[in-house]
Length: 100
Image (cartoon, rainbow, N blue to C red; front, side, top):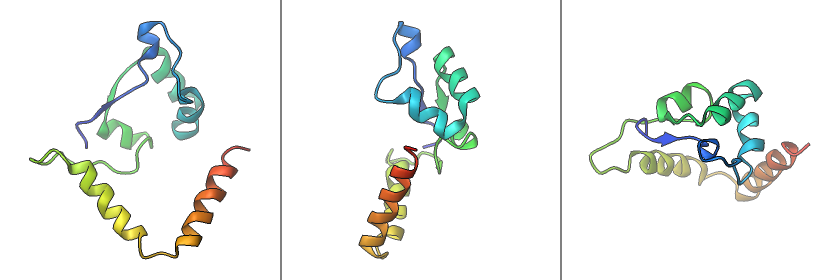
């Protein structure tokens, strides 16, 4: 949702971001922006995340509070009719290619 808050705030607690955040974030948004976000511990909203390429989509929150889930469900329904093996192998090729 556009109102979501996200960030790698570990540096504000004297910690290094875990779970591969220091490796994955630079691949998503570039080294300079990743350093800025990690070093400052700044939190951003969904619209900012979309504008920097961190997320693919942002949607206004709905009254049920599940706007992001509904958008993800729509995307899943678009993927579902595709050939399962081709989707699986495409995912594998992308993931492995990002490791080199």
